[in-house]
Length: 199
Image (cartoon, rainbow, N blue to C red; front, top):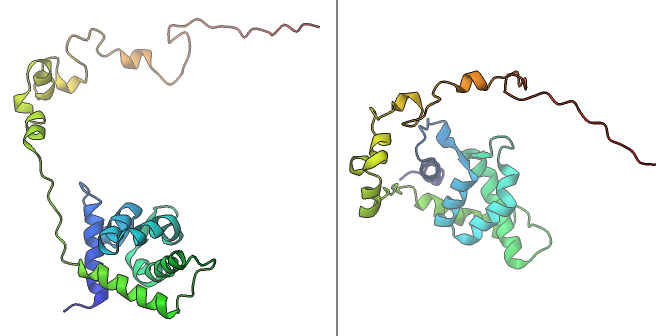
């Protein structure tokens, strides 16, 4: 059986994928998790208490300030022990966070690692589409102007970017340029008015 860290990595990657739907992720991308993925993973593996503490107090401390992502090694080695200390501080209403070497913190860190590792064989749930949604999003069932706008060879030419019947096709570039010259834009120049001071 794989060790705890290896199983935690599988769980970690799973939640990176689940919260990155539609993105083509490399193996390197799967080694970093965003706060949304972290929250979902902690909530499902360790419960609401851990997810709330992470979001408010611990994740911002350990994530990269630019990308807002956390590497797996940081998660496993640094983040989880600090999260355990934070949870104990909140439970006992302590003014100061206990040391990471505190026996309670070490025990809770181990428990959380085991809980995360236990989800290593999680399968991504497929999105189920109900009959109504399937019917409403099927372009072959569209009628009228909606049918025309959904087809590739629509009336008015889908490739042109203009709707059917638009009379000023191709005039955008002529009226919108970078010079912002009022005369070119069809406006008259206005001279600024001087304010009148009353004594």
